[in-house]
Amino acid sequence: LSRDEEGCTILQMEKSCRTRVEVMKGHKNQRMEELKGLAAKDCELCDIMCTTPFSIDQNSVPSVKQLETYRTYLDDLMKEKVAPETPLSDLLLVVQFSSCLFFQEHRHDEFVSTKKEIIAFMNDLEQNPETSFEMDVMCEDEDAFCLSNDNIAALKLLLSHVSLLNLFLNLI
Image 1 (tube, rainbow, N blue to C red):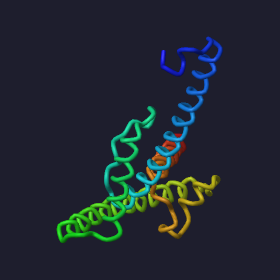
Image 2: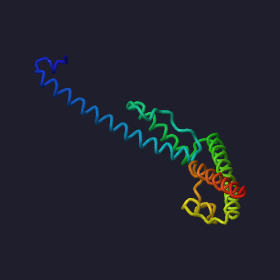
Image 3: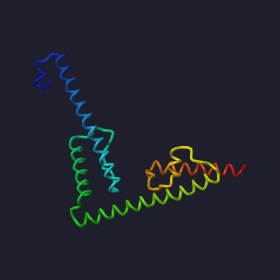
Image 4: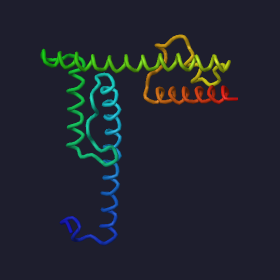
């Protein structure tokens, strides 16, 4: 028992414990919300700078020290993004940017070649785009298509669907 609880009744101690639990729940919720915000910022910066995300367990409550370390890491990353301080960091930024461009170019090339195959199959099938995704793929403006992992996976799925449909109809 603490000094404050020595002369208290059981009901008073229970109330004190419940109050402390509520305060702790508030701290937990606050830390989890801050973690969520920091993770979103981290994800955005990682996409821009082609870096790996900060390593922190998203499912457990972070300590105040862990949140401070995360904030400092993101602040440093933001400074690097805005104004590199040394020639070495300039070089690293150029290398990161170049690898990011290479990755984007690779995705774009993959998109263009897959799109051409899909268009060829759909023309053979005399089929028009039916879904909004198919319309986006068939759209003339290739730069308007978002090259996310999910969209590339959906594009490959669409290609396999139309190629199998084409194969099936050619067997008949």
